[in-house]
Image (cartoon, rainbow, N blue to C red; front, side, top):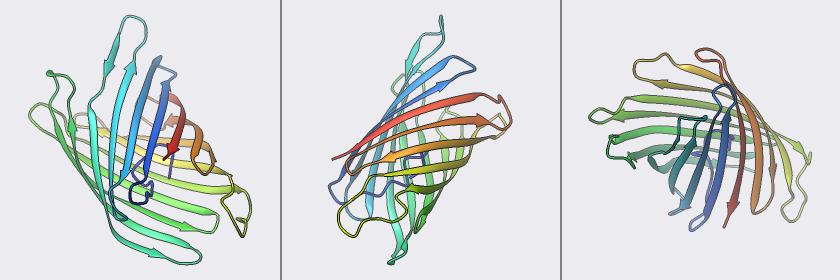
Length: 218
């Protein structure tokens, strides 16, 4: 999966992934730590939960973000000796953790195409704000290339290094879509992953962000 989007992650039935995702906005001196949890309900159904906690620059305080819930249903999947392709549908609710904020509904889709040493992950999500909550939308296009090893061993699971290149966009009602480019590196092991990236706005605020993330598979 790409670094900035969690929804492409494959999970077996009963599998659980815990992810700690840290992001720093270098230009605004703002930090966010998001705790993500994914659970494989079945081979085709996955539940995602996310809860962000934001640290602002001096004098601006801290804030607990809203609980993000998403359900993914894999509507189509094709597995071959060369790789896999799949298409999933997304739906969920954003539950406010503060009485001053309103809930939202969300829906979208995610697709994965994996062949040999490279993988494409594409997803789009529409967020329909209820009451005073603003409508939002996002998209992510991630390309990953396995730098090492060149070939998997005949037996067992080897660790690997992946290069991650992404193009994404974030939109909120009343503002223009902000497109962002991401360059990252992933160290992938059987039960854990460590990954880091730099994110640059291509228009709009033109902020620079740095990401450090780790996830554990139980």
